[in-house]
Length: 250
Ligand code: TMP
Ligand code: ASP
Image (cartoon, rainbow, N blue to C red; front, side, top):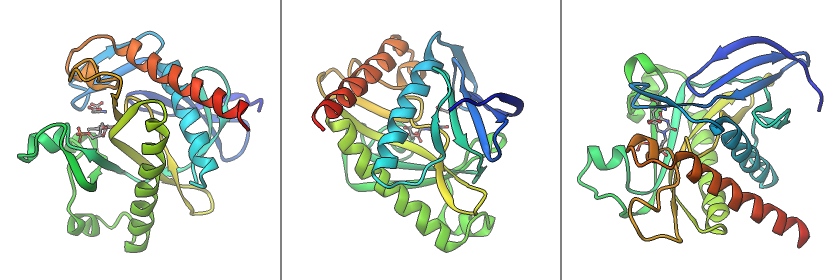
């Protein structure tokens, strides 16, 4: 797909969104910036944009094959994704399979405990408020989406979880938790948007039992463990290996 880059529409912490010369189609540039704790911590990692753009692209391609509606249309270059223009619903949908991160800070559940069933948490996406966790009643009060739309989003998020657990399991990675964002396209259809990458997922390496070594996601940056790019590179390498294997076996 050959498209030309138009004016900048939006700049976030890790991505820039540009208009393109095709209607309803945007270009998303993945930046090398890394932030954590609501941008209190900031750094740049050479090559992170390329790795996240490629990893996200593979994951969206996989999810589309599984029937999940997403904004992904293709890749323009190593760091530019082509996507449907959507109006992002300002909610962060987190699905957790294993206790980690804020769940362990806010409850007595210890890190690494497998949850009986996936836990879905919804946060209000608003940096100035620190992305607060919402209750169902507060979500209703905000009136951002209808009850039916909430059901649709939650069902899609659980489905994505089931597909991604299997996707990562095949390459010896454990999907601890992840965050999704949804948007409304031009036909008012809710579709999966944003990115799915080691910035937005916790991924533990099943080939390692060391609690620090096994971390292959943005927690390496959050916890100052080093080796951020090496970890992201390892994830891309395993995904590419799996994709070329499944292509040759078709
Ligand atoms: P948490 O444990 O800090 O609530 O994070 C849960 C998951 O959501 C984890 O995989 C990281 C991801 N996440 C984001 O993608 N963006 C964010 O702003 C936050 C806080 C978490
Ligand atoms: N994405 C958030 C930030 O930029 C938080 C995080 O991922 O930890 O601060």
